[in-house]
Image (tube, rainbow, N blue to C red):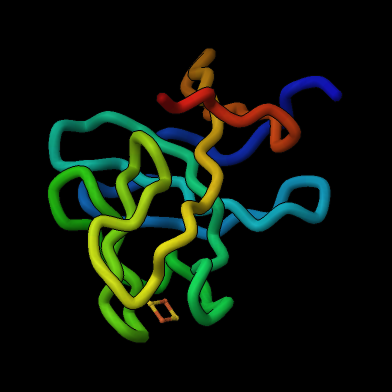
Length: 109
Ligand code: FES
């Protein structure tokens, strides 16, 4: 599958997450405090709620329900109760738009 349009860069505010659904895959698009844009699976691995409704803290997205903070770079939760990672996706920016391929996740070591 090819990359898909996710959102215009102008629609993203610093330290905020926006939920988009691409080919049925819910993704949180996040602009962090440094202005870097991330794409992370939008379903918390603990309680299946939307992470985009949570809080951007540094380079993590914190779940609003029970407070697990997921790394925007790896998808790995940094604290309980979640212990399973969520996927992170490669982001491409072109002509002021954000594109991702929801079938291609980053390889995290
Ligand atoms: S639902 Fe996200 S930490 Fe519990």
